Amino acid sequence: MPLFLDNGIPHILLTLRTDRVKDHQKQISFPGGTVKDDESLIETALREIYEEIGVNKNDIEILGELDEIFTLTYYRIKPFVGFIDYPRKFVLSRDEIEEILFVRIEDLLRKENFRKEIRGNFLGEPYPVYFFTIKDINIWGATAKIIKNFLEVVYNWKE
Image 1 (cartoon, rainbow, N blue to C red):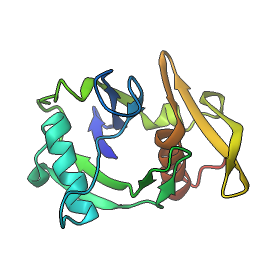
Image 2 (image 1 turned 90 degrees about the vertical axis):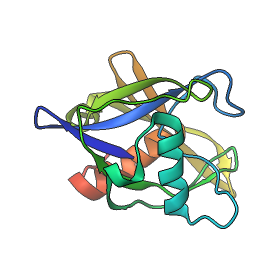
Image 3 (image 1 turned 120 degrees about the horizontal axis):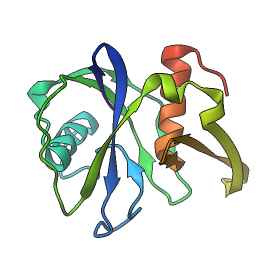
C-alpha cells in the first residue's frame, strides 16, 4: 500500500489492472504479486512495485504491515504499507497496469463512500465484501478489505 503526501494531504496510490493480466482484469488493486523462488514477502512486494509502476525499493520507507487476508478466489495476501515521495515519475508496466489512481485518505474515511455486502461463504462463514466509491473510482474486494484494515488500525475507523 503506497502512501504519499500531495500538498500535505495524505493519499493512497492504487493501480487499474489491464485486461491482459491473468486474474482480476480491469480491477483496482495495489501493486503486488506472487512470491518467486526464495523471496521473502517484503522482497516480493518491493520487486512488484518496481516492476509494475517503477518505484525503486530504495525510494520506499516501509512503515509496517497489515493483517493477512484471504479472498474468495483463494488468494492469500500479506499487505505492507510504505511511504513514497511525491511528486515523482512513474513507469508503468503496460502489460499489467493501465493507470495509476490517487485517492485521498480523507475521502476513504467518509462513511457515505463505504458499503458492505455479504457474498457467499468462506470456510463455512458468511463472507463480507467491502466497497469504497469515490467519484468514478470503485474500489472493492481484497483492495477495499486492505484499505478498511488500514483505516481501522491507523485512524481507529469503524464501519
